[in-house]
Length: 217
Ligand code: AP5
Ligand code: ZN
Image (cartoon, rainbow, N blue to C red):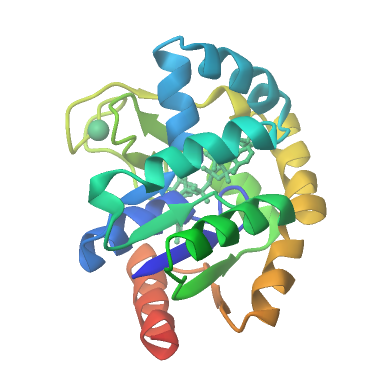
């Protein structure tokens, strides 16, 4: 399957993407994780991306689209993928459509995770992420690690993202409403968008997502 996950910061895209990708045996491709990996390796791309990310803005399209295309063309993504955080504006959605047309493939569904702004702030304030490449996600109250500061899955160190301050989260939410939300309409006109609530226990949201994907299949 080829799936796009859309939703505001803190909607649970990363959390659900890991679970859905595992259940559907497709790679989880997160442009945010790819940028953070570049930042930790101190690559040129990482240095450029960090400036936009720290301000809560989108990284310029030319950098993002090239990186995402390159990742989608890796052998493990040949039979399907789950995109998390890409596309994030209409020009990225158009670039993705072009790539899909060139490769004669199609998206199966665009899953839109809906969550109120107040919940977003609570989720992001308590989020802790592991430094490993898999970037396992925890929450100090909703899904705390067994040992404080240590990843349950791989033993990696947990940290708080630089762009998770309340001020930056508000900016990211504004960017989401103005630049990303229009892609939901874009995909509705293609008959691909399906909206589910991301409130409630993580397992329950996964169940809703799988049910919605089955309906779209
Ligand atoms: P990105 O990394 O994509 O961040 P985001 O979209 O802001 O989303 P988040 O990672 O903040 O949240 P999430 O929805 O994944 O939630 P999570 O599962 O972690 O992008 C970061 C930046 O990179 C952007 O601002 C931009 O600068 C740049 N960028 C990335 N892609 C780009 C693109 N295509 N173009 C341009 N720039 C781009 O969950 C959040 C917390 O809630 C966790 O602690 C989790 O444990 C908890 N939680 C999850 N589900 C539940 C639940 N059901 N109940 C209770 N708690 C829950
Ligand atoms: Zn880990």
